[in-house]
Image (cartoon, rainbow, N blue to C red; front, side):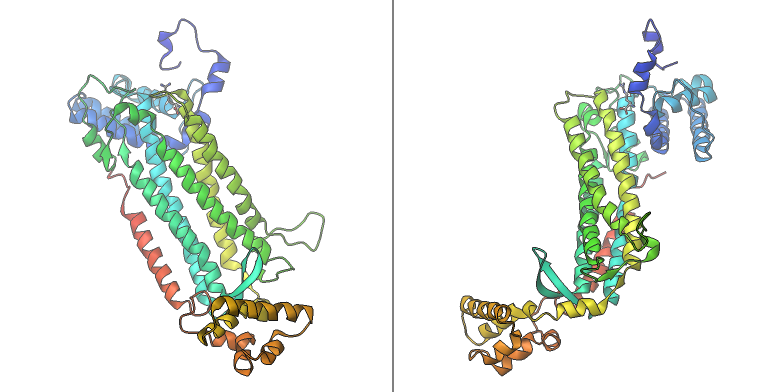
Length: 465
Ligand code: ARG
């Protein structure tokens, strides 16, 4: 029987329940719902609404329900509408009249908002740590790749040589910003809605500040309507996860590209690749492709949920139940992607020779040649034109760039080493960006950033209990 059945003359239609139920997915909130209920019960005792005996019975029943969930023994019944009503039903079975006091001065509206904030807070921490794990793996691979150069690309055309370490760390810095965003979202969501009731609190004495402290929230709601209607934290989290997914997608695309025979820069480890059911020779980069593909779904969760929120009247509406599936799925997908992509990055083999040969393309040093002229007093635009001429002629006349450099009066013998790749790599001027040669400094700064973010992730947002 539904908790509200006595208001109705007739039992609920099966199709109505089938359409409106959320138990099939919100059971993921069991732990958070129990945490919320425990704090609520303690709060009711704290203000004298519940006596010591009922409080003890309720806490014991909530504890027993927690044990049933932990061990997989909790049994749902047909009428359970969602995780919140299922838990209240079971607590009442276990604690009788005391159990029937659980929902005193509480609505599912503030209850569900509380549970979802607790859930989001803990999973943000989990995703943040996994993102830092991947960042750490990128850092390790970069540290071991020092000295390896490859062509850097703009417009997917060869642009300038870059250090492989820098190419890898570019993804690392994006992840570090993701972690910063997750922390930011976590700080803003750290507000307890408990005590807001259905929308306007309760006539019974509550202490929302005290309860917020019990749950380890930084503070309590200021407006009870806002408390039950606000899902900004869901939208923000979906954005954070979508952008993280977009970053993984860009990394994935790079691995797809660099592991083609055409590039030949990366070789994927067998254990982290798939084969073909028909073509015996194939080794496919499915992790990288799915990392790319999942971004579409994550973006869909964000835009879909924003559309759900748009135009909702205050305060709670059942539409808000649609917050859960996209949120849960986004966390699940990003969590799995981070673990798999980490394995991919950790085990990829770098084909140093192919990358170095590609990075030795003299055309990649064209701007260095122009800057060589700038250092000798030529205005940059003229130097750019002069070198552009040489590059075009080198292609048209099928002559090595070095030969034309030697023959050019403004350049000559002393400029040849600039386009002789080995030398050019070794003689980078002192002001050269880290991307070109030494990345020790960048590696150190990145390691420091990872350490700091790890500490920030571990530092806050834990229930005090
Ligand atoms: N399962 C619902 C949700 O997730 C619970 C809230 C239902 N509240 C209500 N007043 N009907 O939103």
